[in-house]
Length: 216
Image 1 (cartoon, rainbow, N blue to C red):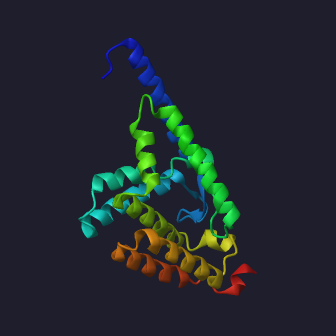
Image 2: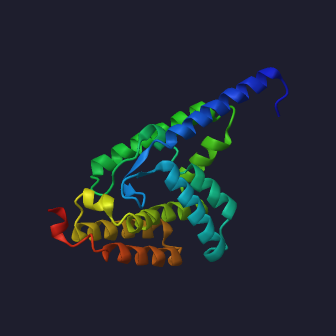
Image 3: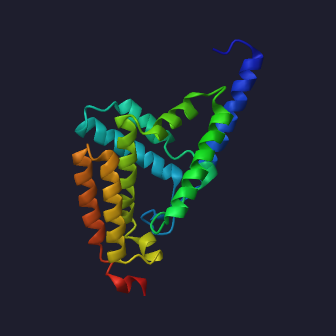
């Protein structure tokens, strides 16, 4: 409760900082994914809204054991560290690069906690709970997060994948490794895994991915 002008000023300052962070978040472009115009990069805010809509819609219809409100909260904050850590390309990521990514994102979580825990604790606290991946809602959001790029690849006709010179065979290997990893934390949601497999099949069937020649 704001009970003094001083508290009001501090709260206003914190909200200005949060607003600044949100605007910066919208300027983070994701890798190898575009709008259907095949020119405009998908931003972190585009992705976050898409994840929130998709994860909540799926949870409400297909996974009644989940708390849809909690799903929405985790979707809203899941990529917030990228304001400071940036979006890391993962199609050809090495183990060393993956470790560096984890360090950058952990540092970003700590920075967000330092900036917002005192006045607006919901933001960093919810992010930390998501990062712990203990709750089924958190694991579910992480799983849907990995499904969404397939939707965008279909909508942008694999523009980003072609730019990255990904062949169908190489992309198949990437998707296979991703499925193994996903099954570890989201395998309990069999319908989600089935959905993911169907979308992968559709991406790999795209005519833009013609095999090794796509890299020429």
